[in-house]
Every structure is written in structure tokens, then in C-alpha cells.
Amino acid sequence: MLNRSWTMARKPPLGWPSDGDFELIETPLPEPAVGQALTRTIYLSLDPYQWGRRRGGLEAVGDVCHGRTVSEVTVDNGSEFSPGDIIFNTNGWQTHGLTGAGVDVFGYMFPRKLDPDSAPISTAIGILGMLGLTAYAGVYVQCDPQPGETVVISAASGGVGQAAGQIARIKGARVVGVAGAQKKCDFVVDELGFDACVSRLSPTFAADLKSACPDGIDVYFENVGGEVYENVLPLLNRNSRITLCGMISQYGNTDGRDAGEVWRQTGAPFFERQAVSVHGLHVRNFVQSHQEKFLAEMTEWIRDGLVKYREDVWQGLDSVPEAFAAMLSGGNFGKTLVKIGDDPTTAQAPETQRARRNILG
Ligand code: NDP
Image (cartoon, rainbow, N blue to C red):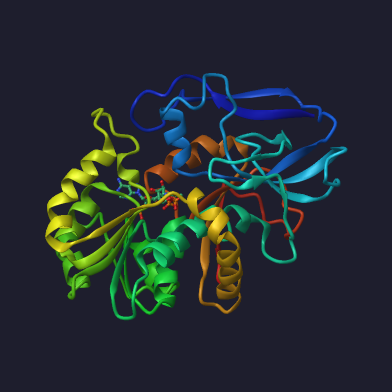
């Protein structure tokens, strides 16, 4: 058996991913050294930050593309694991990977054994993992919405957005989502219980957002930047709060400008006039302090049906570059995962090109 891997084929030009950025190679399976285990990848997480790493030169030509995974131990050579154990690891964009103790880019220890009886294993790289903690930290810790306040969440149906909006609802806020396609807006209102959701693609977006927020905006959870942000700014109330989680609309910009600086300059007059607090968010700053509390609360919320989540699961290693590009341009619907190998904890679904899972509590 061979290991199949997507590697960096070239230094990415500015802009969005395109054909030719990645190359699929086959190599012999790696041999675990003493203290290591060989694993096969079950689920691979695709995240916007991965493009930032590549554009920023953190992955060199020929490197296997980085990615966090849920994997199964197949061969043990004196590691802490046994064959059959399901673990959180960072195998990257490949079918197999070795364990090697470390801390990932978000401050999570890996490898880490997962308990398939406590939650579906894919949630370790989704709602119960880094994404959920990001949402929890931004809403719950940084912005602390009060009952009746209006909270706006951009990229509302995505991995972070869906969790952030539901947490704000639990806090008693009135939650307004912004999403792309109308079906995403319908989903966050009908399935996730947001109070309203407007489409950023509508020609009447600015007016729609204003009428969805008749009392202005008290908290803005920023995932996208760009036009959505520009339309949020005039609606910010006095003493409102922003969590600056990300600005995906700028991750493929080609003008050479510093997106963060542009974001701050655009907002500055509004921030000053309305005494807005801006909280930069990096989830790694909350792993030590909040991971345990977050996991306990989120697990309970899911069990009680207060938080639901949707995963967008692509099938097979070959689909990874396409799934990645789709996620960066709004072609995903929920947290983007790729199922690389069989999931021994679930009944096997038919192997379709793409299976969307809508797991409701
Ligand atoms: P999502 O699942 O939300 O997928 C990305 C979404 O971004 C798309 O579905 C699309 O939603 C939206 N989008 C894409 N292009 C644009 C655009 N031009 N304008 C507006 N929206 C756009 O991804 P994640 O949940 O993984 O990440 C969401 C954000 O959170 C990202 O900015 C990411 O960088 C950030 N993040 C930050 C972390 C931190 O520690 N600060 C940690 C993790 C994530 P739609 O079609 O509905 O508009």
C-alpha cells in the first residue's frame, strides 16, 4: 500500500487557489520510529487559515499540505496508542501520517485519543474542536451579548458562524446572520433558530441588513471583512463590540495592501464616534483558559438540542483541492471536511462525490 499526499506544487501566487498549486504524489507508507504510530486519515479539516499559511510561505514547494485530521492508528511502535484507536492528529492532506507529539498552530496538543462514544469523531475538528472554541471565545468571552441586544454574525452558516450565532441565542440576544446563498439564510433561521438572516449577494443587501437590525447592532462577529463589514459599520450602536475573528473576503487579495490595516482604517471613524470595542481574536489564546469549560458547556448544549451543527463532507483525497477552493469562495454549506478513509464508528454511507451531513443535536 502507498501513501497518497497533496503537496505544494509551487509557491502560490497572490490570489485564490488555482489549478497547478497542488500536486498529488504517491510514496511508500512511512515507518513509525520507536515511540510513534502509523495512522490512516479518516477526516481532514479544510480551513481558511490553511491558505494564509501557504500564501505566507509557511509551506515550501514539495511540502505535504498541512491539515488537522481525525485518524485511526494502524501500526504501533511503542507509542501511547493501540491499533484501532481513533485520534486527533495533523496528518495533513494525505491518506496516512505518523504521530509526533506537538502543539498545533492553534495551541492544541496532538496526538490525542478521542472517545467515539462521547461524540461523533468528526466533531473533534468541528463543533467540539477549534471552530467551536473560536465561536465561544468571540461571543461568550469577548463580546458578552446581553439579553435583547442585536448580534450580527457574518458567514453565518459556516463552521464558526453557525456556532457563534447559536451561542449568542443562548445568551438571550437577538441574532441576525449574514450568508451568501438564500438556502444558507433559510437554514440558519429555520434550523439553527437565528432571528433573521440576510444574503450578502442580494442587490438590496445594505437595505436588508438595516431593516433586519431596526435597533442597530450591539455585537458584530467579523468573519469576512469587505462589503459586509462596510455595511455593518454605520449600524453599530454606542458601546458596541466587535470580535475580529477573520476576514475571508481578503484572503485572496492581490493589491498588496495589509488587509488588517485597511480594516482598521475603514472602521476607525465609526469606532471613535460610537466608542466601539474591537477585540482581536486568536483561538490559541483561549485553549489553556477556556477549552475545558467550553467542551463541557458545548457538549451539554448539543445534548439538549440548543446547538445544532452542519458538516459539509466531501469524499476522497482526490477532491481536496476542489473542496478547499469551494470553501474559500462560499461553495461550502457548513463546516468543510473531507472523508479520506472509512469511518469505523458509523454505518458506511454510499460513496457519493459529496455527502452533506446535517446533524441536529
Ligand atoms: P466557513 O465554514 O465559514 O467558510 C467560509 C465562508 O466564508 C464561506 O462559506 C462564505 O460564506 C464566506 N465567504 C467566502 N468569501 C466571502 C466573501 N468574499 N465575502 C463574504 N463572505 C465570504 O469557514 P470557517 O468557519 O472555518 O472560518 C470562518 C472565519 O473564521 C474565517 O475568516 C477564518 O479565517 C476565521 N477563523 C478565525 C480563527 C481565529 O482564531 N481568529 C479560528 C478559526 C477560523 P457565505 O457563502 O455564506 O457568504
